[in-house]
Length: 586
Image (cartoon, rainbow, N blue to C red):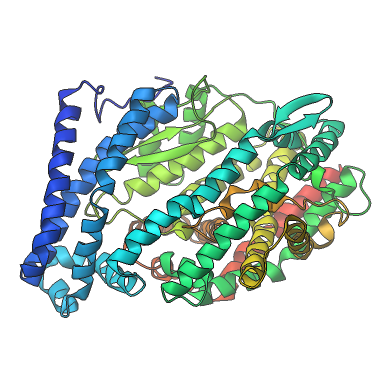
């Protein structure tokens, strides 16, 4: 088994003749796209549609190969300057077609008998969802000139403010026990087993934000006002409506999700109070102990052992999933270990047209790292279930993006809990699961409340740092209730979370709650129905790029606008809290 991934299926290097040939093809594609934009208005609509699809499919596979190779190489080694240069060249080439692509899409959307033409050609019928969404999206586009101006102004507007936030949070230092450390390092100490370390790190972190709070507040205010103005110009009633439109999700579904979350917050408040009592706190859990580890799991895994562990679990669920996991380990899909220059965290990237994915992790052998592998391989399984789609049907919306990955987590975590070798290990696993779920319920809800309040207030007033802190504390008190100590919260969560600092993506919060509870609900259906549910689950994954969020869920007989579905998902955690309390008391 190789411990680093192989990208040879794409190219064997930048001197590979195939890479050079594809770069030449990209230049030809750019010329062809710009020429097509000039000619499309004079073409018969059906011919224009078919040529749009033909070129789009060819370009999608070409661009995916080139960009995947360069970006994956860069992720594995951020010091790879050649890959950084190639990415820059690719972005430059693609940006030169932006105006042409806008013109082409505008023409496609304006075809009066688009519905009839879609029904007349099988290939167009396969792209019905994409083409009709393109038509709907055009209703919210500005003129070609205004779109170009907006894109240019965003470079020195929203994007620049976002860059400022990134720069300030990555360069600020915290004074921790007489030592200056960066923000990421001091935040990571929240997971220390030493309570004194956690408390000192929390104090140092909050003091650290004081140095940059005013500058970051200006960034947040500027980005949010730009988003408010942009969404109004595009005909949306609010930034939230724009996000739901882009997510192919209705407000009724969001309301059902949020209502169910509000009504079941007490499940997670109870968990927090049990943890607080176990750690010696009488007034709820202080923020600095939110991520305090409990129990222990000493087991360590090699990649070979992780493979055997996952195959043993997934063979009992779906042989195709197990076979794909085996291929991932055996065919060098996975880059396992941390090393200098490699990016942190974990991700999965699809290699379109090849029915493969690549997974990056920073594996250190802990059971939680095996769960992370399962999560990322869930994304790979989602990609595998899309392989029969045509090339342009490969993009699913943000709320359903974590479905397969979180489902895998549920399968593996519940198997691990069931097979725990001691009460101490079981406590560690259950507490880890509850800790993660509390984040996607209580914390995500607080972020949603905060961002809603910012948008409601920003239109008419500038929100200084202290006011933003007040809004954040108010949101946390509503979301965490008596589970946390009201005097020891985190007023600067608006500053450290980069999700707020995008002019192109607002409310990057509720999709986490959606994904976690949707996957949990699907897992509960699997427990009820057994193996007969697996083909339904796979069909649901297959449907995600060609249906609304609600449409995909209907494949499994689920009505997302019915609050009872979300309530069933949330209620399933009550048993976890009961078991957590039993283990803590022992």
